[in-house]
Image (cartoon, rainbow, N blue to C red; front, side, top):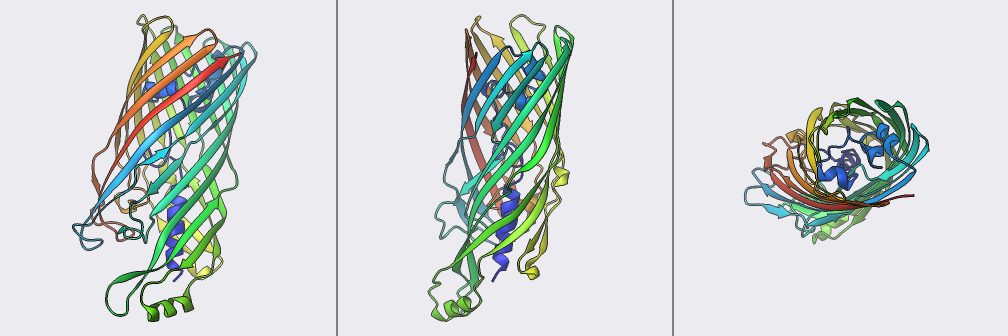
Length: 427
């Protein structure tokens, strides 16, 4: 009876890994409205406080003290169509339309020309699914609801010995919290199939894990800027995941009595997972009057995510679950045009291929290649700035081709649309 706890814990730790419900994998790239208006391409320019996220070397360009606060609204959902043998042709399910609100907040301060410090808080990873009609959803034995929240606190320092070069570094303090819910099933001895006999709610957090990020910015001449960054691999350790079991009536008294005699007690589980590194290189061009163009290349080291290994209070439950993600290259590009002295219009495109193999697709997360089209608008006047963006994500249906680790095969289709705003002030 405890095996479902193992399956749910494995999906818990999958969710606690990086990467966006709106970027490939589980990451959230919505860390600044100005950048997102240009497809998320800001590693080279890095000239607003969100450079703490995109390239810490850039904060040396900012004068005095700057505050930049923002929020994004993410509307997302998933549909599933099953195939034989499980859950079967004709089975169709969908999630509720979910609303996620990742935030970002930055403050930077220039100590003296060429030396600056700052701190940022943002939600780098996140995931949420809530399937309609939980008690009848065909994948409820895997996961019918998940809610993941993460916060990254990123203190940063940057130094520029000349106008042609700057370097920055930061410390990552990552906190993740998750809740998952699933149904536990047993075969009906009377032959009517699987019956729900209980539920399992699992909650956990990683306490606090640490990493670093570094960045450089080079200006070969006044028309070109080159930027590069690296965020290291972080090992997330979950030492106190809590699994709460609740028995429910199956409608079969004899089965309920047998289940009660074996029903698992609440227990803890432990694991540690290597989160991927991220390396970026980018170039920006400002040689055309009123225009700025940028292209960013981002490599995410998903090959670190090979498996999930678990140890339980009951050692007979210890297991290893393969994942076999692949390192991927994503491309983000954008342009900005100064419509007036105060107003800039922006547009962008990105391609973000999924690192998730077909066998790891599940009701928790079924990832797909993503194409994003963005548009943005910026207003700057005196000490104030206001940036807004909209993002539409294109994905194709994806079939796991009968390879599911959960023996739950079919086709998934997802959608996500976003809007966001940042407001900045310079003291």
